[in-house]
Image (cartoon, rainbow, N blue to C red; front, top):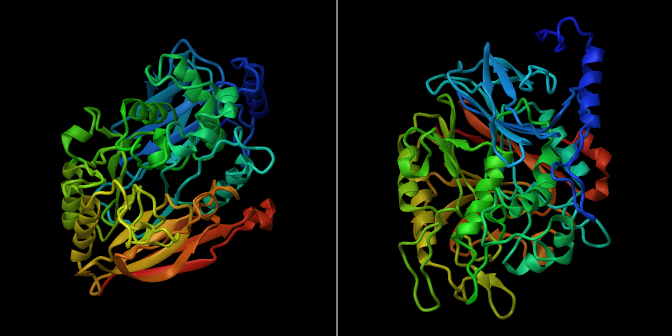
Length: 553
Protein backbone atom coordinates (compact mmCIF):
# COMPACT_ATOMS: atom_id res chain seq x y z
CA UNK A 1 0.00 0.00 0.00
CA UNK A 2 1.09 3.57 -0.68
CA UNK A 3 0.22 6.40 1.66
CA UNK A 4 -1.67 8.99 -0.36
CA UNK A 5 -0.28 11.92 1.61
CA UNK A 6 3.39 11.05 2.04
CA UNK A 7 3.93 9.05 -1.14
CA UNK A 8 5.75 6.35 0.84
CA UNK A 9 4.73 2.72 1.27
CA UNK A 10 2.69 2.20 4.43
CA UNK A 11 4.75 0.53 7.10
CA UNK A 12 8.01 1.52 5.36
CA UNK A 13 9.67 4.81 6.34
CA UNK A 14 9.99 7.25 3.42
CA UNK A 15 13.81 7.26 3.66
CA UNK A 16 13.91 3.46 3.43
CA UNK A 17 11.54 3.54 0.45
CA UNK A 18 13.76 5.97 -1.43
CA UNK A 19 16.92 4.12 -0.51
CA UNK A 20 15.50 0.88 -1.86
CA UNK A 21 14.28 2.36 -5.11
CA UNK A 22 17.44 4.36 -5.75
CA UNK A 23 19.64 1.42 -4.80
CA UNK A 24 17.85 -0.79 -7.31
CA UNK A 25 18.34 1.85 -10.00
CA UNK A 26 22.01 2.37 -9.20
CA UNK A 27 22.67 -1.37 -9.24
CA UNK A 28 20.87 -2.03 -12.54
CA UNK A 29 23.13 -3.15 -15.36
CA UNK A 30 22.67 -1.06 -18.47
CA UNK A 31 23.48 -2.43 -21.90
CA UNK A 32 27.25 -2.14 -22.37
CA UNK A 33 28.55 0.84 -24.30
CA UNK A 34 30.39 0.01 -27.51
CA UNK A 35 33.38 2.26 -28.15
CA UNK A 36 32.15 5.79 -27.51
CA UNK A 37 28.50 4.84 -27.94
CA UNK A 38 25.80 5.87 -25.50
CA UNK A 39 24.01 3.17 -23.48
CA UNK A 40 20.82 1.86 -25.08
CA UNK A 41 18.82 3.49 -22.27
CA UNK A 42 20.30 6.89 -21.40
CA UNK A 43 21.42 7.39 -17.84
CA UNK A 44 19.22 9.96 -16.08
CA UNK A 45 19.71 11.77 -12.79
CA UNK A 46 18.65 9.72 -9.78
CA UNK A 47 16.81 12.67 -8.25
CA UNK A 48 14.74 15.44 -9.75
CA UNK A 49 15.04 19.12 -8.96
CA UNK A 50 11.81 18.98 -6.95
CA UNK A 51 12.93 16.04 -4.83
CA UNK A 52 10.68 13.47 -6.50
CA UNK A 53 12.60 10.25 -6.99
CA UNK A 54 12.24 8.35 -10.29
CA UNK A 55 13.72 5.11 -9.01
CA UNK A 56 13.87 2.69 -11.96
CA UNK A 57 12.18 5.10 -14.38
CA UNK A 58 14.24 6.86 -17.05
CA UNK A 59 11.49 8.94 -18.62
CA UNK A 60 7.74 9.59 -18.31
CA UNK A 61 5.63 11.49 -20.85
CA UNK A 62 1.83 11.46 -20.37
CA UNK A 63 -0.79 12.10 -23.02
CA UNK A 64 -4.04 13.19 -21.40
CA UNK A 65 -7.63 13.71 -22.51
CA UNK A 66 -10.84 14.34 -20.58
CA UNK A 67 -11.36 10.64 -19.82
CA UNK A 68 -8.08 8.98 -20.83
CA UNK A 69 -4.39 8.86 -19.96
CA UNK A 70 -1.79 7.34 -22.30
CA UNK A 71 1.63 7.13 -20.70
CA UNK A 72 5.00 6.40 -22.34
CA UNK A 73 7.87 5.35 -20.09
CA UNK A 74 11.25 3.66 -20.19
CA UNK A 75 12.98 1.73 -17.42
CA UNK A 76 16.64 1.33 -16.53
CA UNK A 77 16.41 -2.45 -16.43
CA UNK A 78 14.49 -4.43 -19.10
CA UNK A 79 11.51 -6.39 -17.84
CA UNK A 80 10.25 -9.80 -19.00
CA UNK A 81 6.89 -9.24 -17.33
CA UNK A 82 4.64 -6.24 -17.73
CA UNK A 83 4.86 -3.46 -15.14
CA UNK A 84 1.57 -2.20 -13.73
CA UNK A 85 0.05 1.27 -13.47
CA UNK A 86 -2.43 1.83 -10.65
CA UNK A 87 -4.98 4.62 -11.20
CA UNK A 88 -8.29 5.23 -9.47
CA UNK A 89 -8.46 1.79 -7.91
CA UNK A 90 -7.63 0.02 -11.17
CA UNK A 91 -4.44 -1.69 -12.21
CA UNK A 92 -3.48 -1.61 -15.90
CA UNK A 93 -0.74 -3.78 -17.41
CA UNK A 94 1.84 -2.08 -19.61
CA UNK A 95 2.25 -2.97 -23.27
CA UNK A 96 5.84 -3.52 -24.32
CA UNK A 97 6.93 -1.14 -27.08
CA UNK A 98 10.48 -2.34 -27.78
CA UNK A 99 12.29 -5.64 -28.24
CA UNK A 100 13.97 -5.80 -24.81
CA UNK A 101 11.28 -4.73 -22.39
CA UNK A 102 12.71 -1.30 -21.48
CA UNK A 103 9.88 0.75 -23.03
CA UNK A 104 6.25 0.44 -21.94
CA UNK A 105 2.94 2.06 -22.81
CA UNK A 106 0.03 2.37 -20.39
CA UNK A 107 -3.47 3.31 -21.51
CA UNK A 108 -6.21 4.08 -18.99
CA UNK A 109 -9.72 4.98 -20.15
CA UNK A 110 -13.09 5.77 -18.53
CA UNK A 111 -11.69 8.38 -16.18
CA UNK A 112 -13.50 11.50 -14.96
CA UNK A 113 -12.81 14.88 -16.60
CA UNK A 114 -11.05 17.62 -14.63
CA UNK A 115 -10.00 15.15 -11.95
CA UNK A 116 -6.64 14.91 -10.20
CA UNK A 117 -5.50 11.29 -10.10
CA UNK A 118 -2.67 9.62 -8.25
CA UNK A 119 -0.56 7.35 -10.45
CA UNK A 120 1.52 4.48 -9.06
CA UNK A 121 3.93 2.51 -11.23
CA UNK A 122 4.90 -0.94 -9.99
CA UNK A 123 6.71 -4.00 -11.31
CA UNK A 124 4.91 -7.28 -12.00
CA UNK A 125 5.35 -8.34 -8.36
CA UNK A 126 3.83 -5.14 -7.00
CA UNK A 127 7.07 -3.43 -5.97
CA UNK A 128 7.13 0.34 -6.64
CA UNK A 129 9.27 1.43 -9.57
CA UNK A 130 9.13 5.10 -8.54
CA UNK A 131 7.25 7.38 -6.21
CA UNK A 132 3.55 8.00 -6.94
CA UNK A 133 2.74 11.25 -8.75
CA UNK A 134 -0.35 13.34 -9.58
CA UNK A 135 -1.89 13.99 -13.00
CA UNK A 136 -5.11 15.81 -13.87
CA UNK A 137 -7.43 14.96 -16.75
CA UNK A 138 -8.63 17.66 -19.16
CA UNK A 139 -12.03 19.37 -18.89
CA UNK A 140 -15.03 17.75 -20.56
CA UNK A 141 -15.85 19.08 -24.05
CA UNK A 142 -18.98 20.82 -22.77
CA UNK A 143 -17.29 22.32 -19.68
CA UNK A 144 -16.83 26.07 -19.42
CA UNK A 145 -13.44 26.71 -17.78
CA UNK A 146 -12.50 30.34 -17.32
CA UNK A 147 -8.78 30.03 -18.11
CA UNK A 148 -6.05 27.94 -19.69
CA UNK A 149 -2.28 28.26 -19.74
CA UNK A 150 -0.37 26.48 -22.52
CA UNK A 151 3.40 26.07 -22.74
CA UNK A 152 4.45 25.88 -26.40
CA UNK A 153 7.91 25.52 -27.92
CA UNK A 154 9.70 23.96 -30.89
CA UNK A 155 13.05 22.41 -31.86
CA UNK A 156 14.03 21.04 -28.45
CA UNK A 157 16.07 18.20 -29.96
CA UNK A 158 19.73 17.98 -30.84
CA UNK A 159 22.42 15.34 -30.26
CA UNK A 160 24.72 16.67 -27.58
CA UNK A 161 26.71 13.44 -27.87
CA UNK A 162 27.34 14.16 -31.56
CA UNK A 163 28.45 17.80 -31.38
CA UNK A 164 29.94 18.51 -27.98
CA UNK A 165 33.47 19.52 -28.89
CA UNK A 166 35.30 22.41 -30.52
CA UNK A 167 33.15 24.75 -32.56
CA UNK A 168 30.53 22.08 -33.29
CA UNK A 169 27.91 23.53 -31.00
CA UNK A 170 24.80 23.38 -33.16
CA UNK A 171 22.74 22.48 -30.08
CA UNK A 172 22.60 23.69 -26.51
CA UNK A 173 23.88 21.34 -23.80
CA UNK A 174 21.08 19.16 -22.50
CA UNK A 175 21.58 20.58 -18.99
CA UNK A 176 20.80 24.10 -20.27
CA UNK A 177 17.70 22.88 -22.09
CA UNK A 178 16.51 21.10 -18.97
CA UNK A 179 17.05 24.22 -16.89
CA UNK A 180 15.01 26.27 -19.36
CA UNK A 181 12.17 23.76 -19.40
CA UNK A 182 12.16 23.53 -15.61
CA UNK A 183 11.77 27.30 -15.48
CA UNK A 184 8.90 27.09 -17.97
CA UNK A 185 7.15 24.53 -15.77
CA UNK A 186 7.43 26.86 -12.77
CA UNK A 187 4.75 28.97 -14.48
CA UNK A 188 2.38 26.00 -13.98
CA UNK A 189 1.07 25.40 -17.49
CA UNK A 190 -2.06 23.27 -17.79
CA UNK A 191 -0.69 21.48 -20.86
CA UNK A 192 2.42 21.42 -23.05
CA UNK A 193 2.71 21.42 -26.86
CA UNK A 194 6.08 20.49 -28.35
CA UNK A 195 5.71 21.50 -31.98
CA UNK A 196 8.17 19.40 -33.96
CA UNK A 197 11.87 18.61 -34.32
CA UNK A 198 12.30 16.53 -31.18
CA UNK A 199 15.37 14.92 -32.74
CA UNK A 200 18.07 15.86 -35.25
CA UNK A 201 19.83 13.03 -37.09
CA UNK A 202 19.47 13.81 -40.81
CA UNK A 203 20.27 10.90 -43.09
CA UNK A 204 19.85 11.45 -46.85
CA UNK A 205 19.54 15.24 -47.01
CA UNK A 206 22.48 17.56 -47.54
CA UNK A 207 23.22 18.00 -43.83
CA UNK A 208 23.47 14.24 -43.41
CA UNK A 209 27.23 14.33 -44.02
CA UNK A 210 27.61 16.20 -40.73
CA UNK A 211 24.84 14.32 -38.90
CA UNK A 212 23.46 10.82 -39.40
CA UNK A 213 25.98 9.85 -42.10
CA UNK A 214 29.02 11.26 -40.31
CA UNK A 215 31.82 9.13 -38.85
CA UNK A 216 30.94 10.57 -35.45
CA UNK A 217 27.32 9.39 -35.75
CA UNK A 218 28.47 5.91 -36.72
CA UNK A 219 30.78 5.83 -33.70
CA UNK A 220 28.06 7.05 -31.34
CA UNK A 221 25.07 5.07 -32.58
CA UNK A 222 25.89 2.90 -35.58
CA UNK A 223 24.26 3.24 -38.97
CA UNK A 224 20.65 2.73 -40.03
CA UNK A 225 19.91 0.08 -42.65
CA UNK A 226 17.07 1.52 -44.73
CA UNK A 227 16.25 -1.90 -46.15
CA UNK A 228 15.12 -3.16 -42.73
CA UNK A 229 12.37 -2.23 -40.29
CA UNK A 230 13.35 0.06 -37.44
CA UNK A 231 12.10 -2.00 -34.49
CA UNK A 232 13.10 -5.61 -34.06
CA UNK A 233 16.33 -5.27 -36.06
CA UNK A 234 19.78 -3.77 -35.49
CA UNK A 235 18.15 -0.45 -36.41
CA UNK A 236 16.48 -0.47 -33.01
CA UNK A 237 19.84 -0.12 -31.26
CA UNK A 238 20.76 2.75 -33.58
CA UNK A 239 17.46 4.50 -32.82
CA UNK A 240 17.94 4.16 -29.06
CA UNK A 241 21.48 5.50 -29.11
CA UNK A 242 20.78 8.29 -31.60
CA UNK A 243 17.39 9.51 -30.34
CA UNK A 244 17.29 8.35 -26.72
CA UNK A 245 19.55 11.10 -25.33
CA UNK A 246 17.55 13.73 -27.26
CA UNK A 247 14.17 12.71 -25.80
CA UNK A 248 14.40 10.45 -22.74
CA UNK A 249 17.72 12.02 -21.78
CA UNK A 250 16.26 15.53 -22.11
CA UNK A 251 12.83 15.16 -20.51
CA UNK A 252 13.45 12.45 -17.94
CA UNK A 253 10.52 12.69 -15.54
CA UNK A 254 10.11 16.49 -15.53
CA UNK A 255 6.78 16.42 -17.37
CA UNK A 256 5.20 13.53 -15.45
CA UNK A 257 2.36 15.73 -14.12
CA UNK A 258 1.80 17.78 -17.30
CA UNK A 259 -0.30 16.65 -20.28
CA UNK A 260 1.97 16.68 -23.33
CA UNK A 261 1.18 16.87 -27.05
CA UNK A 262 4.11 16.09 -29.33
CA UNK A 263 3.68 17.05 -32.99
CA UNK A 264 6.23 15.81 -35.54
CA UNK A 265 8.08 17.85 -38.20
CA UNK A 266 10.72 17.16 -40.84
CA UNK A 267 13.70 16.22 -38.66
CA UNK A 268 11.54 13.71 -36.77
CA UNK A 269 11.58 11.71 -40.01
CA UNK A 270 15.37 11.79 -40.11
CA UNK A 271 15.52 14.45 -42.83
CA UNK A 272 15.67 18.16 -43.55
CA UNK A 273 12.98 19.39 -45.93
CA UNK A 274 14.70 19.91 -49.26
CA UNK A 275 14.35 19.07 -52.93
CA UNK A 276 16.72 18.62 -55.84
CA UNK A 277 16.90 16.66 -59.08
CA UNK A 278 18.38 13.77 -57.06
CA UNK A 279 16.20 13.85 -53.93
CA UNK A 280 12.94 15.17 -52.50
CA UNK A 281 12.86 14.30 -48.83
CA UNK A 282 9.06 14.56 -48.55
CA UNK A 283 6.58 12.98 -48.62
CA UNK A 284 8.50 10.56 -46.40
CA UNK A 285 9.48 7.21 -47.86
CA UNK A 286 8.77 3.90 -46.12
CA UNK A 287 11.84 4.04 -43.89
CA UNK A 288 11.32 7.68 -42.88
CA UNK A 289 7.70 6.97 -41.90
CA UNK A 290 8.81 3.91 -39.95
CA UNK A 291 11.48 5.96 -38.17
CA UNK A 292 9.01 8.66 -37.08
CA UNK A 293 6.38 6.10 -36.10
CA UNK A 294 8.89 4.02 -34.10
CA UNK A 295 10.18 7.09 -32.26
CA UNK A 296 6.64 8.00 -31.27
CA UNK A 297 5.88 4.41 -30.27
CA UNK A 298 8.79 4.37 -27.82
CA UNK A 299 9.10 7.88 -26.45
CA UNK A 300 6.03 10.12 -26.55
CA UNK A 301 2.26 9.58 -26.65
CA UNK A 302 0.25 9.39 -29.81
CA UNK A 303 -2.37 12.11 -30.17
CA UNK A 304 -5.98 11.44 -29.24
CA UNK A 305 -8.15 11.42 -32.34
CA UNK A 306 -11.03 13.85 -32.51
CA UNK A 307 -14.31 11.99 -33.15
CA UNK A 308 -14.72 13.86 -36.44
CA UNK A 309 -11.23 13.01 -37.72
CA UNK A 310 -11.48 10.88 -40.90
CA UNK A 311 -11.22 7.19 -40.07
CA UNK A 312 -8.25 6.67 -42.39
CA UNK A 313 -6.14 8.92 -40.15
CA UNK A 314 -6.88 7.31 -36.80
CA UNK A 315 -6.34 3.90 -35.31
CA UNK A 316 -9.17 1.67 -34.03
CA UNK A 317 -8.05 2.64 -30.53
CA UNK A 318 -8.94 6.30 -31.12
CA UNK A 319 -5.37 7.47 -31.61
CA UNK A 320 -3.77 9.60 -34.30
CA UNK A 321 -0.10 9.86 -35.19
CA UNK A 322 -0.21 13.22 -36.95
CA UNK A 323 -3.53 15.10 -36.62
CA UNK A 324 -5.54 16.00 -33.55
CA UNK A 325 -7.67 18.52 -31.71
CA UNK A 326 -6.73 19.67 -28.21
CA UNK A 327 -9.98 20.79 -26.55
CA UNK A 328 -10.13 22.74 -23.30
CA UNK A 329 -13.86 22.56 -22.75
CA UNK A 330 -15.66 25.28 -24.69
CA UNK A 331 -12.92 27.83 -24.03
CA UNK A 332 -10.21 26.80 -26.50
CA UNK A 333 -9.43 24.39 -29.30
CA UNK A 334 -6.02 23.80 -30.89
CA UNK A 335 -5.82 22.04 -34.24
CA UNK A 336 -2.52 20.16 -34.41
CA UNK A 337 -1.32 19.00 -37.82
CA UNK A 338 1.89 17.56 -39.19
CA UNK A 339 2.71 19.17 -42.55
CA UNK A 340 5.16 16.43 -43.61
CA UNK A 341 3.47 13.04 -43.16
CA UNK A 342 0.72 13.52 -45.76
CA UNK A 343 2.38 16.17 -47.96
CA UNK A 344 1.52 15.84 -51.65
CA UNK A 345 3.75 17.25 -54.39
CA UNK A 346 3.82 16.29 -58.04
CA UNK A 347 5.58 19.46 -59.15
CA UNK A 348 8.53 19.22 -61.52
CA UNK A 349 10.69 21.98 -63.07
CA UNK A 350 8.15 22.56 -65.85
CA UNK A 351 4.84 22.12 -64.07
CA UNK A 352 3.06 23.09 -60.84
CA UNK A 353 0.25 20.97 -59.48
CA UNK A 354 -2.51 23.08 -57.95
CA UNK A 355 -3.86 19.96 -56.22
CA UNK A 356 -0.85 19.56 -53.98
CA UNK A 357 -1.01 20.34 -50.27
CA UNK A 358 1.02 20.20 -47.08
CA UNK A 359 -1.84 18.17 -45.60
CA UNK A 360 -4.04 15.65 -47.46
CA UNK A 361 -7.41 16.86 -48.86
CA UNK A 362 -9.32 14.87 -46.23
CA UNK A 363 -7.38 16.59 -43.43
CA UNK A 364 -7.88 20.00 -45.01
CA UNK A 365 -11.64 19.38 -45.06
CA UNK A 366 -11.49 18.31 -41.41
CA UNK A 367 -9.56 21.46 -40.48
CA UNK A 368 -12.05 23.63 -42.34
CA UNK A 369 -15.02 21.97 -40.67
CA UNK A 370 -13.48 22.22 -37.18
CA UNK A 371 -12.63 25.88 -37.76
CA UNK A 372 -16.11 26.74 -38.98
CA UNK A 373 -18.13 24.78 -36.46
CA UNK A 374 -16.08 24.53 -33.28
CA UNK A 375 -18.15 25.72 -30.31
CA UNK A 376 -15.04 27.04 -28.56
CA UNK A 377 -14.55 30.71 -27.78
CA UNK A 378 -11.01 30.65 -29.17
CA UNK A 379 -9.40 28.42 -31.80
CA UNK A 380 -5.79 28.18 -32.94
CA UNK A 381 -4.23 26.33 -35.83
CA UNK A 382 -0.90 24.78 -34.82
CA UNK A 383 0.70 23.41 -37.99
CA UNK A 384 4.26 22.12 -37.97
CA UNK A 385 5.09 24.58 -40.79
CA UNK A 386 4.50 28.23 -39.80
CA UNK A 387 2.54 30.93 -41.58
CA UNK A 388 3.70 34.51 -42.30
CA UNK A 389 7.49 33.97 -42.32
CA UNK A 390 9.81 32.26 -44.77
CA UNK A 391 13.47 31.25 -44.74
CA UNK A 392 13.46 30.24 -48.40
CA UNK A 393 13.26 26.54 -47.60
CA UNK A 394 11.60 24.21 -50.08
CA UNK A 395 8.96 22.73 -47.78
CA UNK A 396 7.16 25.98 -46.90
CA UNK A 397 3.74 27.35 -47.73
CA UNK A 398 5.43 30.14 -49.72
CA UNK A 399 7.25 30.42 -53.09
CA UNK A 400 10.00 32.75 -51.80
CA UNK A 401 13.56 31.66 -52.60
CA UNK A 402 16.93 33.31 -53.08
CA UNK A 403 17.87 34.86 -56.39
CA UNK A 404 21.37 35.02 -57.91
CA UNK A 405 22.24 37.98 -55.67
CA UNK A 406 21.23 36.10 -52.54
CA UNK A 407 18.04 38.12 -52.02
CA UNK A 408 15.05 36.21 -50.67
CA UNK A 409 11.82 36.87 -52.55
CA UNK A 410 9.57 35.72 -55.36
CA UNK A 411 11.52 37.04 -58.37
CA UNK A 412 13.00 33.57 -58.92
CA UNK A 413 10.83 30.48 -59.16
CA UNK A 414 11.40 28.00 -56.34
CA UNK A 415 12.31 24.62 -57.84
CA UNK A 416 9.96 21.70 -57.16
CA UNK A 417 7.56 23.93 -55.24
CA UNK A 418 3.87 23.46 -56.21
CA UNK A 419 1.40 26.35 -56.24
CA UNK A 420 -1.10 24.09 -54.49
CA UNK A 421 0.72 24.55 -51.20
CA UNK A 422 0.06 28.29 -51.24
CA UNK A 423 -3.54 27.77 -52.36
CA UNK A 424 -4.17 25.43 -49.45
CA UNK A 425 -2.57 28.05 -47.15
CA UNK A 426 -5.06 30.65 -48.38
CA UNK A 427 -8.06 28.40 -47.94
CA UNK A 428 -7.12 27.65 -44.32
CA UNK A 429 -6.29 31.29 -43.64
CA UNK A 430 -9.55 32.62 -45.08
CA UNK A 431 -11.60 30.00 -43.28
CA UNK A 432 -10.07 31.02 -39.96
CA UNK A 433 -10.70 34.71 -40.66
CA UNK A 434 -14.31 34.05 -41.64
CA UNK A 435 -15.27 33.47 -38.01
CA UNK A 436 -15.62 37.13 -37.07
CA UNK A 437 -16.33 36.25 -33.45
CA UNK A 438 -12.76 34.93 -33.02
CA UNK A 439 -9.24 36.17 -33.68
CA UNK A 440 -7.64 33.76 -36.18
CA UNK A 441 -4.55 32.24 -34.55
CA UNK A 442 -1.64 30.31 -36.08
CA UNK A 443 0.97 29.13 -33.57
CA UNK A 444 4.05 27.29 -34.86
CA UNK A 445 7.78 26.74 -34.62
CA UNK A 446 10.25 25.15 -37.08
CA UNK A 447 12.15 28.37 -37.96
CA UNK A 448 14.24 28.53 -34.75
CA UNK A 449 12.94 31.96 -33.83
CA UNK A 450 10.66 33.97 -31.55
CA UNK A 451 8.22 36.25 -33.36
CA UNK A 452 4.66 37.58 -33.60
CA UNK A 453 2.73 39.32 -36.35
CA UNK A 454 -0.54 39.80 -38.18
CA UNK A 455 -1.42 38.79 -41.74
CA UNK A 456 -3.45 41.60 -43.30
CA UNK A 457 -3.65 40.13 -46.80
CA UNK A 458 -2.50 37.11 -48.76
CA UNK A 459 -2.10 38.11 -52.37
CA UNK A 460 -5.45 39.57 -53.43
CA UNK A 461 -7.25 38.14 -50.39
CA UNK A 462 -7.79 40.82 -47.75
CA UNK A 463 -7.99 39.92 -44.05
CA UNK A 464 -8.01 43.48 -42.75
CA UNK A 465 -11.43 43.12 -41.15
CA UNK A 466 -10.15 40.19 -39.06
CA UNK A 467 -6.35 39.85 -39.41
CA UNK A 468 -4.77 36.49 -38.64
CA UNK A 469 -2.26 36.40 -35.79
CA UNK A 470 0.83 34.23 -36.26
CA UNK A 471 3.31 33.36 -33.49
CA UNK A 472 6.71 31.65 -33.58
CA UNK A 473 7.02 30.13 -30.15
CA UNK A 474 10.81 29.81 -29.71
CA UNK A 475 13.36 26.96 -29.54
CA UNK A 476 14.93 25.62 -26.32
CA UNK A 477 17.54 23.50 -28.09
CA UNK A 478 19.33 25.56 -30.75
CA UNK A 479 23.05 26.24 -30.28
CA UNK A 480 25.20 29.04 -31.71
CA UNK A 481 25.78 27.27 -35.04
CA UNK A 482 22.20 26.05 -35.34
CA UNK A 483 20.50 29.31 -36.26
CA UNK A 484 19.26 29.61 -39.87
CA UNK A 485 21.32 32.80 -40.33
CA UNK A 486 24.43 30.71 -39.58
CA UNK A 487 24.03 27.47 -41.51
CA UNK A 488 21.62 28.74 -44.19
CA UNK A 489 22.64 32.40 -44.30
CA UNK A 490 19.04 33.56 -43.99
CA UNK A 491 16.95 34.84 -41.09
CA UNK A 492 13.16 34.34 -41.33
CA UNK A 493 11.35 37.25 -42.98
CA UNK A 494 7.73 37.79 -44.08
CA UNK A 495 6.84 36.25 -47.42
CA UNK A 496 6.59 38.72 -50.31
CA UNK A 497 3.19 37.23 -51.10
CA UNK A 498 1.73 38.68 -47.89
CA UNK A 499 0.86 42.07 -46.46
CA UNK A 500 1.75 41.92 -42.78
CA UNK A 501 2.12 43.85 -39.57
CA UNK A 502 5.18 42.48 -37.77
CA UNK A 503 4.57 42.96 -34.07
CA UNK A 504 7.87 41.31 -33.19
CA UNK A 505 10.33 40.55 -36.01
CA UNK A 506 11.95 37.10 -35.67
CA UNK A 507 14.63 36.88 -32.98
CA UNK A 508 17.16 34.06 -33.21
CA UNK A 509 17.45 33.26 -29.53
CA UNK A 510 16.44 30.37 -27.32
CA UNK A 511 13.09 30.55 -25.64
CA UNK A 512 9.49 29.44 -25.32
CA UNK A 513 6.00 30.93 -25.19
CA UNK A 514 3.05 30.81 -22.80
CA UNK A 515 -0.50 31.25 -24.05
CA UNK A 516 -2.94 32.47 -21.40
CA UNK A 517 -6.50 32.02 -22.59
CA UNK A 518 -9.56 33.60 -20.99
CA UNK A 519 -13.03 34.18 -22.46
CA UNK A 520 -12.06 37.76 -23.34
CA UNK A 521 -8.58 37.38 -24.82
CA UNK A 522 -5.49 35.35 -25.58
CA UNK A 523 -2.28 36.73 -24.08
CA UNK A 524 1.05 35.49 -25.44
CA UNK A 525 4.08 35.80 -23.15
CA UNK A 526 7.42 35.20 -24.86
CA UNK A 527 10.73 34.33 -23.22
CA UNK A 528 14.27 34.72 -24.61
CA UNK A 529 17.75 33.69 -23.50
CA UNK A 530 21.27 33.48 -24.92
CA UNK A 531 24.31 31.59 -23.57
CA UNK A 532 26.02 34.94 -23.02
CA UNK A 533 23.60 35.55 -20.13
CA UNK A 534 24.86 32.45 -18.32
CA UNK A 535 22.82 29.41 -17.39
CA UNK A 536 22.02 30.79 -13.93
CA UNK A 537 19.81 33.41 -15.63
CA UNK A 538 17.49 30.61 -16.76
CA UNK A 539 16.33 30.09 -13.18
CA UNK A 540 14.68 33.51 -13.04
CA UNK A 541 13.65 33.97 -16.67
CA UNK A 542 10.68 36.31 -17.19
CA UNK A 543 8.75 37.31 -20.33
CA UNK A 544 10.53 39.96 -22.36
CA UNK A 545 7.32 40.82 -24.22
CA UNK A 546 3.58 40.18 -23.88
CA UNK A 547 1.01 40.43 -26.66
CA UNK A 548 -2.69 40.65 -25.81
CA UNK A 549 -5.22 39.75 -28.49
CA UNK A 550 -8.77 40.51 -27.34
CA UNK A 551 -11.70 38.63 -28.75
CA UNK A 552 -13.36 40.67 -31.52
CA UNK A 553 -16.21 42.81 -30.28
